[in-house]
Image 1 (spheres, rainbow, N blue to C red):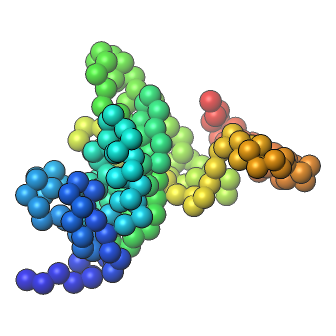
Image 2 (tube, rainbow, N blue to C red):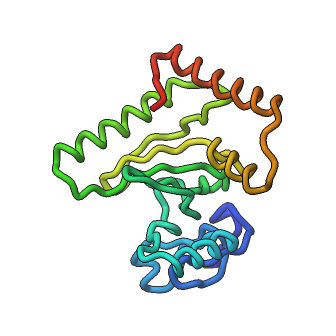
Length: 201
Protein backbone atom coordinates (compact mmCIF):
# COMPACT_ATOMS: atom_id res chain seq x y z
CA UNK A 1 0.00 0.00 0.00
CA UNK A 2 1.43 3.38 -0.94
CA UNK A 3 1.55 6.38 1.39
CA UNK A 4 -0.16 9.55 0.23
CA UNK A 5 0.29 13.13 1.39
CA UNK A 6 -3.23 13.04 2.79
CA UNK A 7 -2.21 10.29 5.24
CA UNK A 8 -0.01 12.67 7.21
CA UNK A 9 -1.32 16.13 6.33
CA UNK A 10 1.98 17.35 4.93
CA UNK A 11 4.08 17.32 1.79
CA UNK A 12 7.06 18.69 3.72
CA UNK A 13 10.21 16.59 4.02
CA UNK A 14 11.26 15.55 7.47
CA UNK A 15 13.62 13.32 9.43
CA UNK A 16 13.27 10.90 12.31
CA UNK A 17 14.83 12.49 15.41
CA UNK A 18 16.14 9.11 16.57
CA UNK A 19 17.71 7.57 13.44
CA UNK A 20 17.66 10.41 10.86
CA UNK A 21 15.55 8.51 8.28
CA UNK A 22 13.93 10.84 5.72
CA UNK A 23 10.35 11.03 4.50
CA UNK A 24 7.17 13.05 4.99
CA UNK A 25 6.69 15.06 8.17
CA UNK A 26 4.44 13.23 10.66
CA UNK A 27 4.93 9.82 9.03
CA UNK A 28 5.82 7.07 11.51
CA UNK A 29 9.45 5.97 11.25
CA UNK A 30 9.63 2.38 10.02
CA UNK A 31 13.03 1.52 11.52
CA UNK A 32 12.47 -1.19 14.16
CA UNK A 33 13.83 0.69 17.18
CA UNK A 34 12.04 3.88 16.14
CA UNK A 35 8.73 2.09 15.57
CA UNK A 36 8.98 0.54 19.06
CA UNK A 37 9.51 4.01 20.52
CA UNK A 38 6.63 5.59 18.57
CA UNK A 39 8.86 7.95 16.59
CA UNK A 40 7.54 10.11 13.74
CA UNK A 41 9.37 12.32 11.28
CA UNK A 42 9.69 16.00 12.17
CA UNK A 43 10.43 19.04 9.93
CA UNK A 44 14.07 19.22 8.86
CA UNK A 45 14.72 22.58 10.59
CA UNK A 46 13.52 21.17 13.91
CA UNK A 47 15.51 17.99 13.29
CA UNK A 48 18.68 20.09 13.01
CA UNK A 49 17.82 21.87 16.30
CA UNK A 50 17.19 18.50 17.96
CA UNK A 51 20.50 17.02 16.73
CA UNK A 52 22.45 20.08 17.90
CA UNK A 53 20.75 20.05 21.31
CA UNK A 54 21.38 16.29 21.69
CA UNK A 55 25.06 16.85 20.90
CA UNK A 56 25.47 19.41 23.68
CA UNK A 57 23.12 17.99 26.32
CA UNK A 58 23.83 15.33 28.92
CA UNK A 59 20.13 14.43 28.81
CA UNK A 60 18.77 14.60 25.25
CA UNK A 61 15.02 15.11 24.85
CA UNK A 62 13.36 11.76 24.11
CA UNK A 63 9.82 12.98 23.43
CA UNK A 64 10.60 14.99 20.28
CA UNK A 65 9.18 12.94 17.40
CA UNK A 66 6.48 11.30 19.50
CA UNK A 67 2.76 11.96 19.36
CA UNK A 68 0.54 13.01 22.22
CA UNK A 69 -3.04 12.58 21.04
CA UNK A 70 -3.23 14.50 17.74
CA UNK A 71 -0.06 16.48 18.45
CA UNK A 72 3.39 15.69 17.05
CA UNK A 73 6.17 17.09 19.26
CA UNK A 74 8.72 18.71 16.95
CA UNK A 75 10.93 20.85 19.20
CA UNK A 76 11.61 21.64 22.84
CA UNK A 77 10.83 25.30 23.57
CA UNK A 78 11.78 25.32 27.24
CA UNK A 79 11.25 23.80 30.60
CA UNK A 80 11.41 24.25 34.31
CA UNK A 81 11.12 22.29 37.52
CA UNK A 82 7.50 21.30 36.93
CA UNK A 83 7.10 20.90 33.17
CA UNK A 84 8.47 21.11 29.66
CA UNK A 85 7.00 23.11 26.78
CA UNK A 86 7.19 21.74 23.24
CA UNK A 87 6.42 23.15 19.83
CA UNK A 88 3.92 20.69 18.37
CA UNK A 89 1.99 20.23 15.14
CA UNK A 90 -1.70 19.43 15.40
CA UNK A 91 -2.36 16.60 12.97
CA UNK A 92 -3.57 16.44 10.26
CA UNK A 93 -3.96 20.22 9.86
CA UNK A 94 -0.30 20.92 10.79
CA UNK A 95 -1.21 23.90 13.01
CA UNK A 96 1.64 24.95 15.29
CA UNK A 97 0.76 24.88 19.00
CA UNK A 98 2.60 24.95 22.31
CA UNK A 99 2.20 21.80 24.42
CA UNK A 100 3.14 21.91 28.11
CA UNK A 101 3.65 18.51 29.73
CA UNK A 102 4.08 17.93 33.46
CA UNK A 103 7.42 16.27 34.25
CA UNK A 104 7.42 12.73 35.59
CA UNK A 105 7.89 13.16 39.29
CA UNK A 106 10.05 11.04 41.56
CA UNK A 107 8.92 12.83 44.70
CA UNK A 108 6.50 11.62 47.35
CA UNK A 109 2.95 10.71 46.39
CA UNK A 110 1.61 13.78 48.22
CA UNK A 111 3.93 16.11 46.29
CA UNK A 112 3.04 14.45 42.98
CA UNK A 113 -0.69 14.83 43.68
CA UNK A 114 -0.18 18.49 44.65
CA UNK A 115 1.77 19.23 41.45
CA UNK A 116 -0.88 17.51 39.32
CA UNK A 117 -3.58 19.52 41.09
CA UNK A 118 -1.70 22.78 40.47
CA UNK A 119 -1.23 21.89 36.80
CA UNK A 120 -4.94 21.11 36.46
CA UNK A 121 -5.81 24.37 38.24
CA UNK A 122 -3.63 26.23 35.70
CA UNK A 123 -5.62 24.62 32.88
CA UNK A 124 -8.94 25.52 34.55
CA UNK A 125 -7.83 29.13 34.97
CA UNK A 126 -6.65 29.38 31.37
CA UNK A 127 -9.94 27.89 30.14
CA UNK A 128 -11.81 30.88 31.62
CA UNK A 129 -9.72 33.48 29.81
CA UNK A 130 -10.41 34.83 26.32
CA UNK A 131 -8.22 37.87 25.73
CA UNK A 132 -5.89 39.01 22.90
CA UNK A 133 -2.94 39.34 25.31
CA UNK A 134 -3.37 35.87 26.87
CA UNK A 135 -2.73 32.63 24.99
CA UNK A 136 -5.84 30.52 24.40
CA UNK A 137 -6.26 27.05 25.89
CA UNK A 138 -6.88 24.57 23.07
CA UNK A 139 -6.89 21.30 24.99
CA UNK A 140 -6.22 19.71 28.37
CA UNK A 141 -5.46 15.99 28.52
CA UNK A 142 -3.42 13.21 30.08
CA UNK A 143 -0.55 11.35 28.38
CA UNK A 144 1.09 8.33 30.01
CA UNK A 145 -0.35 9.42 33.37
CA UNK A 146 0.90 13.00 33.03
CA UNK A 147 -1.38 15.98 32.37
CA UNK A 148 -0.70 18.29 29.45
CA UNK A 149 -1.99 21.66 28.25
CA UNK A 150 -2.12 22.77 24.60
CA UNK A 151 -2.19 26.51 23.90
CA UNK A 152 -1.70 28.89 20.99
CA UNK A 153 1.90 29.13 19.80
CA UNK A 154 3.01 32.72 19.30
CA UNK A 155 5.65 32.76 16.54
CA UNK A 156 8.74 34.74 17.47
CA UNK A 157 7.39 35.68 20.90
CA UNK A 158 9.87 36.60 23.59
CA UNK A 159 9.42 37.20 27.27
CA UNK A 160 9.90 40.76 28.47
CA UNK A 161 13.21 39.67 30.03
CA UNK A 162 14.38 38.21 26.70
CA UNK A 163 13.33 41.34 24.82
CA UNK A 164 15.20 43.59 27.26
CA UNK A 165 18.27 41.34 27.01
CA UNK A 166 18.19 41.48 23.18
CA UNK A 167 17.82 45.25 23.26
CA UNK A 168 20.65 45.66 25.78
CA UNK A 169 23.00 43.45 23.74
CA UNK A 170 22.23 45.33 20.54
CA UNK A 171 22.92 48.67 22.18
CA UNK A 172 19.43 50.02 21.70
CA UNK A 173 16.99 50.44 24.53
CA UNK A 174 13.25 50.78 24.44
CA UNK A 175 11.75 54.07 23.35
CA UNK A 176 9.19 55.62 25.68
CA UNK A 177 6.31 54.82 23.32
CA UNK A 178 7.47 51.16 23.15
CA UNK A 179 7.55 50.94 26.95
CA UNK A 180 4.06 52.45 27.11
CA UNK A 181 2.75 49.98 24.51
CA UNK A 182 4.27 46.94 26.28
CA UNK A 183 2.98 48.04 29.69
CA UNK A 184 -0.46 48.79 28.27
CA UNK A 185 -0.75 45.27 26.78
CA UNK A 186 0.65 43.64 29.91
CA UNK A 187 -1.63 45.53 32.28
CA UNK A 188 -4.67 44.98 30.04
CA UNK A 189 -4.11 41.21 30.17
CA UNK A 190 -3.52 41.27 33.94
CA UNK A 191 -6.63 43.42 34.52
CA UNK A 192 -8.70 40.92 32.54
CA UNK A 193 -7.26 37.95 34.47
CA UNK A 194 -7.85 39.71 37.80
CA UNK A 195 -11.46 40.41 36.81
CA UNK A 196 -11.84 36.59 36.63
CA UNK A 197 -10.23 36.18 40.08
CA UNK A 198 -7.00 34.82 38.61
CA UNK A 199 -3.66 36.08 39.91
CA UNK A 200 -0.49 35.60 37.83
CA UNK A 201 2.47 34.43 39.92
